[in-house]
Length: 138
Image (cartoon, rainbow, N blue to C red; front, side, top):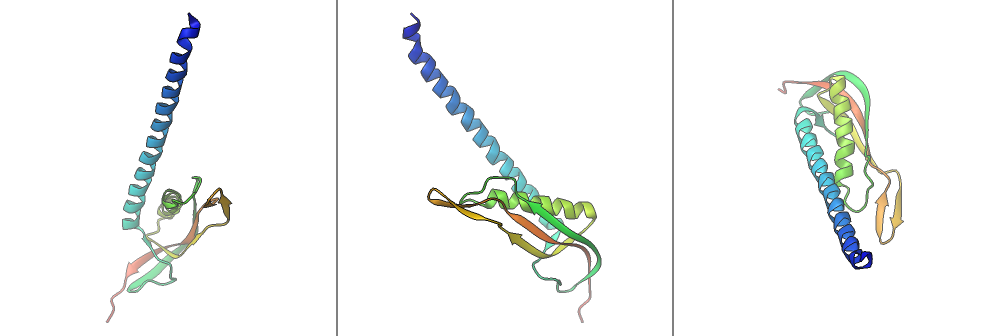
């Protein structure tokens, strides 16, 4: 009797694992979309530039260095990890009271070959948090 039920248990277990894995994957991408929206909103509040000066702006206060590090495992799609690192750095700058980040740099410490894909261990953003004001240009 039990031997006749074994295929049902096997199929049931496979279906359970399939749908359980899908819900985790969907929640992962939902979280990624949420972080991307947050980064987009924070970039409206905090200007980010790679230069040390901003045209028509004056730096009135320097808060110091800010850093953001990704937490996700990175493969060919770096968008999620990029947003994680940027989000962490922008939040740190916002807590300090900055409205701009100058000297923005992105670092990817290590690259390694994983099968047929290149992957990096993490993405790190660094910059200097500052407060800026508008300056009249004659």
